[in-house]
Length: 217
Image (cartoon, rainbow, N blue to C red; front, top):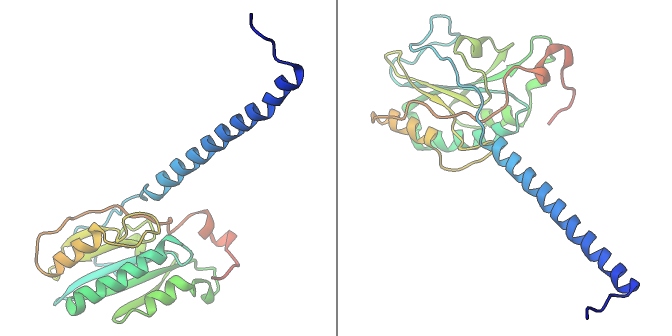
């Protein structure tokens, strides 16, 4: 004959069931969050529609003796901090085989100090890198760049040989195919021509001159 549990015993099981349900819900929420974070970190931005040859409308001249590297950056993009670290290592690896230009986005209506962030300071601290202010992304538009971290490499004969990013995920520093491709190109070796770019949009709601950020890094 089955012995019925007393009321106190049955009530004692309630906290255990509730705790189990709470743990299940918590694990589910954490799991969903981790999946979304992984998806965000590994989802690239839109690829550049870069000209196949150096455009006549470019504001700087192509170096006829070395490869010319262009990098487009949003000064408030956290992802681009990792890009700066990778650019510093890349310049150290390639040495004088590259002419490097970094273009920092700034809305026309913004105060000149708007783009003076850690991203720009990091670019200016890398020896040999020419840092420019890209008002309203004019130069980025000429080269079809849409995402912060977009890197383009042109050969001395004006050909585009590489377009992509130099990080393997959003804000993730470390070995990556983009940097390796640029080094290979500078050494005259076959290259991987495209890699994904992980970064913020150069133009978007946060960069609209009508809604400029007032925060500073």
